[in-house]
View (tube, rainbow, N blue to C red):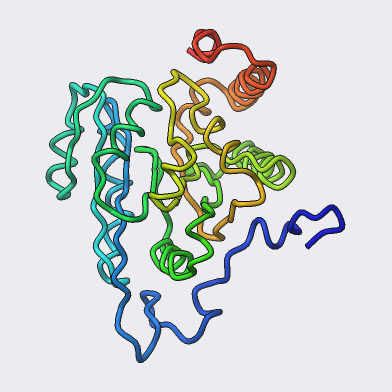
Length: 264
């Protein structure tokens, strides 16, 4: 605990690696003990997400080998491509709702049956080890009043991508502001107590993270690898600057509907 009374960075941004609580097998299960009965729903908002959705769903397929079988919910905002077919082929449940990420996340959470909720973007794939980290986190009863996110990464080998990852790391560490592309793991009871995601057109992730609070956030070492397509198409500097402008306007209390016009 720091001198200010807030937990130190190590407390805020680290969860023990899966083996730290005792020997685990290759899938994160404690050796010599039965697999825990983890009740978890993974909510993925989608709108014409066929390009990246299969990769995202494939990254979740090893959960069963790690000792649990998540419910996967696709909160679809009216896709006209192959999103629904990809989801149903993977065994996910599709929930139809109005478009808008905040609206879709909220609708997915309402439809979810799990005690734990994991929110994930449709163009973000979790790296191997995510399920074991989730198991370690959810086993600790203290974490029912905390939330966890993954480490931000891009599927691009360019120096610009590495620079952006570094910027996000500093934003996380200094401001405690991970975005939705880092995923979010939270207990249903805590989610409801905080009021859940709001029906706003933009900044729904920042809005909710601020209600969680930096002192109740944990950062997993496992990476959430997001598609860099938008950054490559718009240009890293231009898109990063636009995101910074939007965040600044949000903190200046500009209504999200007006920020959305800038964001496009």
